Length: 254
Image (cartoon, rainbow, N blue to C red; front, side, top):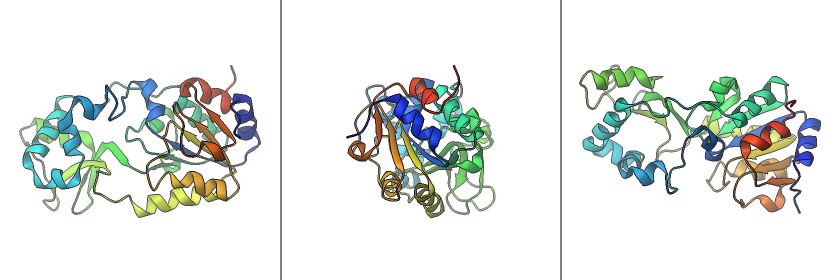
């Protein structure tokens, strides 16, 4: 049976040489970013935004794209949010030399804003703060495209190849980047401790990294508000506030 003691988790982290982290939406809720399907979720409150997240609908329906770009141009998504103590704790884990890789299911770039090195972060679902071309792969800051929308282009296309532009996120119907998935799986194999934070561990295939790490001999620590399918094989399970528990687990001095 797993322990439910923060101190056990702290000792595992302290004794580890390499730690791989997987984060989900739960780590960003204390920064004011809602989930997608909860009572106050982004898609619950704005069904049009959910339509735009389906790649087939996005590609085939110009009106969906028009509304999506207009919504983004009216106010940058999450413009005022800031990293919280959970994000900062994981940046500390890197500073003390223990972080192998930080895999995130989030698209908010709050880990990088907290100080995590971009080359340590695998954004398995992409980022909403960048835009990309579906045809040639062009990529730049989202604001570059939003400036065109505000100037009167309701459905901006790529200036290089004419392809459709969208946020650099993985939409429903799109495959995960094979290279990113390979990096995540390798990081799971190589670590001593696998720390899953704010994720239900229910989204395939990235949830398999927890099992991969466990099978490779790593201790599994889960910090999440609700139970997950992997709780039974974990060394420690904490159903606690992430922004309160993580600083303790990674050993940030009071």
